[in-house]
Image 1 (tube, rainbow, N blue to C red):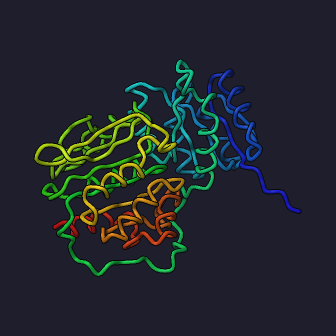
Image 2: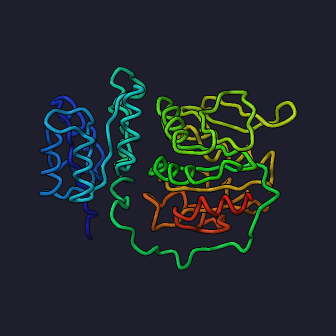
Image 3: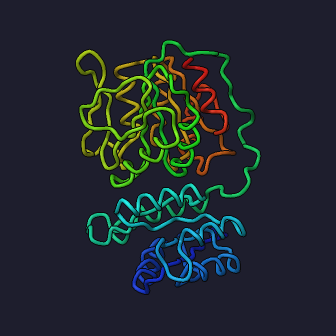
Length: 347
């Protein structure tokens, strides 16, 4: 009986303590083996080239060569999935988003002073992210295994009163491409649930706002949502759209056992379905797992329009695949076509 090959991990960190602890935590899961460790970015690049690991964990602040510079060299010379380790600071969030733009698959906050969320206590999340990253596409896109993209014959979707977007691993970069191309006169509000810690969603909203003709902001509890604005659900909380006053507003609340993901695409999708039924344009972008698949499929079955990112352009084809397998996709499109399609449907 053949034994499944272990995921080979390279750890890059200038702290001997972090290297030792990360190795111990990573190898608690029998799916992984740490093949080597590097003490700075330069050594990390060299060992990535020579060892060809399945995934690299990369610290950001290091001597000789920073994690960002090392990431750039790795993606240029020997594309390999990289998971960044970042700090829970405004600067850490900004640099982390830059790393995701440069090709990092995912990130995990160190949070060493937070006993509940530090990287060693959150070992299950670390293992999940590392495994998903090891399966991620970081090379030139291959032809999709989906037989043919499903394309709807609908030219517009005038009954839509709201658009929702779900995303996870690879999402920040995908969102950058989609949101930056949407027109300023979008006639509905857009609400996004991106799997991301609380300290990072504000930075993501700011970054998207800088490159979009729409107003992009992090949601505030009780805020009325307006057409032509894009709202990022705050990390660490669930977001629901509710009726409020003469229109609609949002409620945010801590998790009460609804989902491992906060914000959850499923929770957002269910709230939108409860209020708008079929008057929804939903978009599922790249991400690991299946969060949102049930609610997006239910929306589609009621007559909502659901766009799913295709496999070839997804960093991780988990969440999109789950929607497709449940029969919840109205159409499946490459990332480069999604913004134009949304704009045409909502024109």
